[in-house]
Image 1: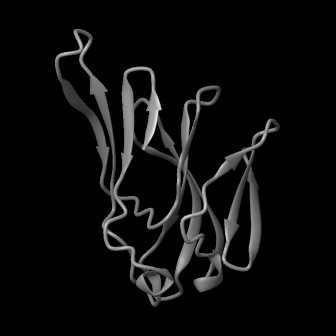
Image 2: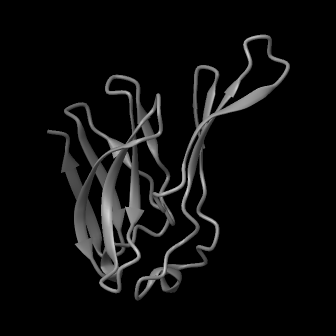
Amino acid sequence: MISAGNSLIVENNYGYTGPEATLLGKTTTPGFARIDIDPDGNGCHQAWANTTEAAPTVVPKLSLATGLIYTYTKGDEATDPWYFTALDFRTGATVWKHLTGTGPGYNNNYAGITLGPNGTAYLGVIPGLIAVHDN
């Protein structure tokens, strides 16, 4: 979960029980949502939902400078593709996806994304570390 101002970003990773849960095209239930607390503090409402992106194991991050939520998503193809993915904080739309690789070695197994001061996103995966830069 990410907190920013009066908003909470929630990620659905239901179904992840370990690396074997994402093998051979399997993935978790997709979904992200932004929940906004009402200005009077007496309730909340869903601002948006993205039900297409599946993020099995990541701890996403929000950059207030770019307005992007950085996450790590998985496709459902048998090659097991993994992507650095950016979602728009305002709308929840997928802004871009960058394939980092295919196969079980690209599973991050609950490692969190770290954003560097130069815009580089770093993520630990099972055999090591990967990095992606914004264009």
